[in-house]
Image (tube, rainbow, N blue to C red):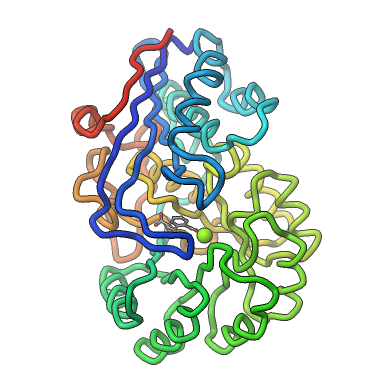
Amino acid sequence: MKIDRITLRQVRVPLKAPFETSFGRMSRKDCVIVSVYSDGIAGYGESVAFSHPYYNEETTDTIWYMLEHFLVPALVGKEVTSPEEVAVLFAPIRRNHMAISAIETAVWDLYAKRSGLSLAHALGGGKQEIEVGVSIGIEPTVDLVVRNVERFAEQGYKRMKVKIKPGFDIQVVEAIRKRFGDELPLMVDANSAYTLRDIPILKELDHYNLLMIEQPLAHDDIIEHAALQLEMRTPVCLDESIHTLADARHAIDLGSCRIMNIKIGRVGGLANAKQIHDLCLQRGIPVWCGGMLELGIGRLHNVALSSLSNFSIPGDVSASDRYWEQDIVIPGIQMVRPGVLAVPTHAGIGHEVCEQTIERLTVRKLQGIT
Ligand code: OSB
Ligand code: MG
């Protein structure tokens, strides 16, 4: 298929409620919606970076810059036979994985639509439904976190993840266990807020039957995480530290984690995400799909990826109403049963994209680049 033209739109959407992690509080999401066209059919991608460089080094503005000056010019007018070629085309570019992913995922959607395949099938995923969990932010009090856990448990989410930071950790987990018992599937995510000096506190967490602790140490570390995993019973899960297939292999070889979080944007697109999934399957490391407060396009890419077999732990793939008053896909993403999302069967991402809503939210636009 020939890529005839590409449109970039930056949308700005308020979150229903602010979301706080150890690196800061967010009240809105800015992202770039990439539309790639071939013979009048559109494929959609969504950038997942934030407007600040506190999760990783990319921002909405660096993504826009990379798309405008490098990625769109390299792809537009090209003949593409399979979406895997896009990852190869952009492989010489250093990092900027979330920018590459925004356009690569759009080509996957386009390819699947043109082939009459659901995106899940195009990726080789077999599941018809996926179980989902939810990520719960830091609040001014422990009690407010407990109340949010209760609310999301009532909605059916199958696994609770609570954000922690030094000084807001043991007491949160303790309060949740006291209120909901030892069986509630519970994990914590530190977003790199600790160091090896905190080993005594981190080992405390071993007493609370947690599914895992996500990214406790530095965002660019796999060495100290290996040392920590030797000291802890709770499985360590890596998020920020994994950018490439080689990173994943090194982390497994070193024993830096027993579980891996795969985010499509962080690893530069769906082709790379699938390769990391396949490696982890071979090596006996279960994976789950992470989230970046995506709107519906990004979430539907996550749903399709989660249909692969080794996504055996419920991910942060919550429904549209978790963060948004109104989503940009129709219908919005909703549970079919408590804690369960259906993997769409229609071609591509499987839900219609609401152009009107996107236009209403757009703050910057480059239309019809040829
Ligand atoms: O570490 O997974 C993370 C949100 C912002 C930045 C980092 C993370 C998160 C989440 C939210 O945990 C997951 C989601 O619901 O999208
Ligand atoms: Mg995380």
